[in-house]
Image 1 (tube, rainbow, N blue to C red):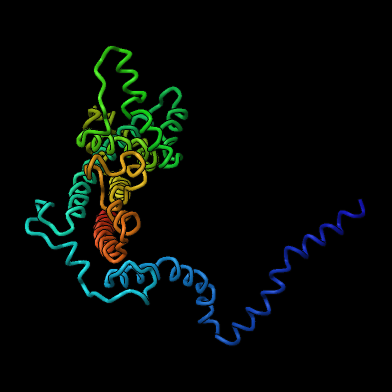
Image 2: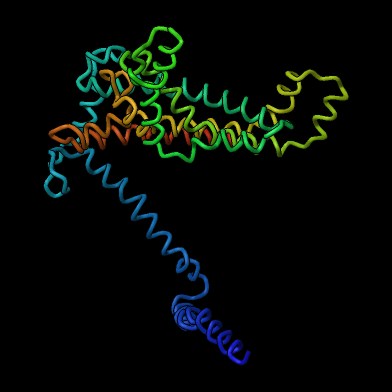
Length: 332
C-alpha cells in the first residue's frame, strides 16, 4: 500500500524526464534565434527527411538520366547529355514500335496506354457498383464489406501466385473445365488472353480500396435528399444521375486519379503473374524501367532513369489535372 505513491512518483519522473532535458535547450534556442524563427526548429527534422528520401533521389535520378555507362557511382559515369532521351524518343513511326530505337520502351508504352484506361474505367465502374450495393441494407453487409476489402490486404506476390496457380495450364480453372467436359485453355500463354487476365487480376486485387472510398462518400450524402426524391417519384436512375453522382463527384475524382496513378505504376502483380509475357504482351512501362536498369546485362541505369523521369512527368500532369478538377468542384 505504501509503495504505490513511490512508484507513481518514479513513473512521473521518467515521463517528464525528456521535457526536463529538452526545455532548457529550447529556451536557449528561443533566446538565440528569436520567437519568429522557432517554427523552423520544429520543421527541420521533417524537412531533412523530405530532402533525404524524396528530393535527393529525384536529383540523383535526373543526374543519372544525363550520364552513361553501367557503373553505379556518379563519379564513374560519363556525361552524355540528352542521349538517353534521344534513344527513348527516336522513332521513325511512333505507331510502329519495331521502327523505334528503343522498341521495347514503345511496346511497354503502348501496352500501358491500353492497360491504364481500360483498367481505370472497369475498376471505377465495378467499385461504384459494389459501393452502391454495400450501401444498401443487405443481410450480411459487414461480412461482404470485409470480403471485398480482403484482397487489398494481401501481398501483390501472393495475389499473383494465387492467380498463376488458377490460370496455369494445369491449374484450377482448367481442372474445373476439364471436369465439366469443356475444352481447356492455356490462359497465360496467349497474348490477348494474358493481357485480359492481367487487367482482371489487378482489378480484383485493388477494387476493395476504391470501393471503401466510394462507400464513405455515399454514406456522407444526407438521407433526406433521397426521401425528397422518393416523394417526387424519381426513378432509381434519375436519383443516381441527379443526386448521387453530383454529390459523389469529389470522391469519384479522387478515386479516378488514385486509380490512374496506381495503374501506371503497376509492376509487382504482373511481373510475378506473367513476367511481361508472352513475349512483351503484358510488359508495362515500370517493368521496362526495372528490366533496363537492373535485370538485363549490361545494366543501363541512365536509360532507366530517363524512362522513369518521363513516367514521373506523366504522373505530375495527372496530379495537376486532379488538383484543377478538385478546385473547380469545390468552387462550383
